Length: 196
Image (cartoon, rainbow, N blue to C red; front, side, top):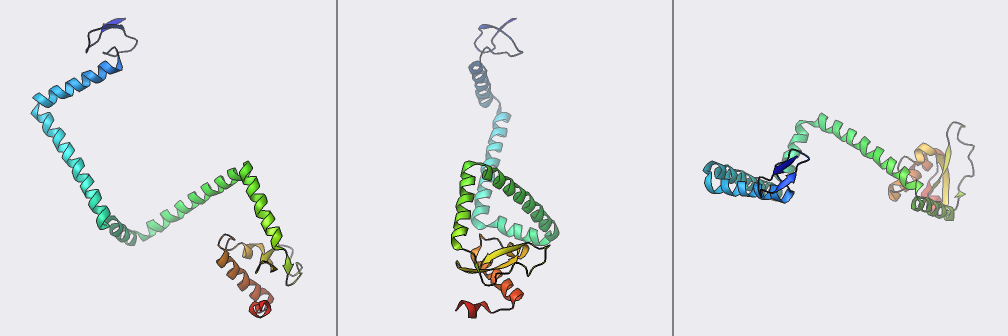
């Protein structure tokens, strides 16, 4: 089916219900219509100018809010007013982020770089050694799994797995303080005297 282009007047085979032979003709025709409207129609010009003014005003407001810190103060007040909703949202967001991180870790471990990283980590822990203060794994019942917890690079003692992993090893200072505290409670010893 042949048609004439609305812009250039060229004949072309129309596969769809388009009125233009090419994309350039369509764009040019639209621009021509906009220019004619701008020059002749006053209402169109007013609407366009109003829209432009509103966009400029919005940008000014945003910049002003950033400078003065209005949004921070507003959010603080909102959190105070809607405290329960805020806590619930934080819990849900934390769970979602945790699940994503676990998935990423699993995917990373399956790659070649992840396997190399795990090997390096295990090798570092082997170098530290396992010289324990008490060589007893039998203190704990069969239900609990004992795990070796380092106090120093040289010395350590056995703790239940849940207590040892209560604070992760990435936070070294907190992890060591927690392990020392639990070892002193379980074995009833002052570690400061022994370490001196």
